[in-house]
Length: 362
Image 1 (cartoon, rainbow, N blue to C red):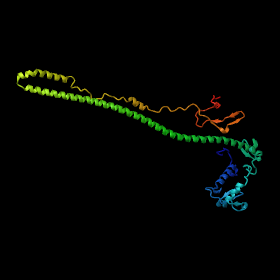
Image 2 (image 1 turned 30 degrees about the vertical axis):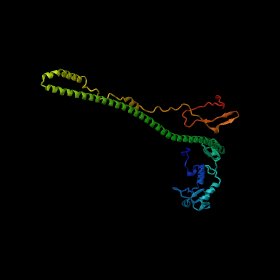
Image 3 (image 1 turned 180 degrees about the horizontal axis):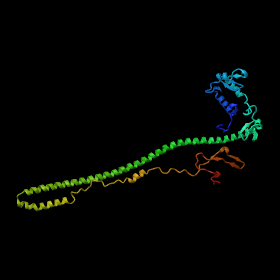
Image 4 (image 1 turned 60 degrees about the horizontal axis):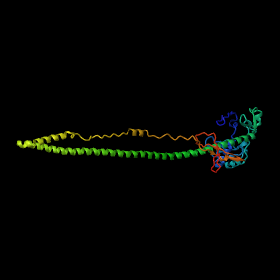
């Protein structure tokens, strides 16, 4: 069974000769080889084909020297065959008219009709004796023209699809370039936005540090002032205590009594002055500042991209196929197609004309 056309053929005593020859493929290969001007190879070598040495015009086969001696000896009926150099044989094959295709079942009969049911050329003997006797047949030339026309139409449609595919590939390649450019631009924008956030955070950090420094200087000033005040007060108290001790050492009662009342009042007054919060620090060592960074940290953790741009439901403008547009009398025919990357299916468009004078569309 052929894997391409899915036709089943029986291998009879004729062997491979019983299979239909693909004459079109042979012609394509001949034209391809002639265009390449490649070295002709032997057609009978079992493994790697060797370069052909001769060509038999009657057998239409290229031989290397070993295959010629083995398969085409110069005796018997083969002695009358004409062997020519491969290049000359290729020229003669190109100039000679192509052989008429013969029936695979009846080698002496030429194909003259086409079996519609089996979809294959047949001869008159197949219609009279063979399996095609009850099948619908048509003229070979008419079916050849019909299939050629159908193939041409199919090729035109396939050509349009191939053209669209090429345009689509160009758009995809442009998309790759555009994605690269947009990625670089987006990364630069993201870095700039993050740098702006970092700059704002650094500025706020500097402001907060300034407040901490001010609080630090204020605490130091208050403590230093209290140290200075207590130092002076302690010096005065120490002097008073030393003076009182010296007075106590005196043995003159009348002289002592003259100043004792004043000294006693002064000592009590000084003691009272130390007892009115003087020995309590006016400033604590702790900083009564607490940075509330939880909302900012939460915002940083929640920092993310907003929802991607939603594609617009509005369809893209159609592409006019100018080669299919035409005008006839007072009518015009416009042919259009959707852009290859359009995601919105469009059933039709409303055509409005502009008079060119700034008026309304109609």
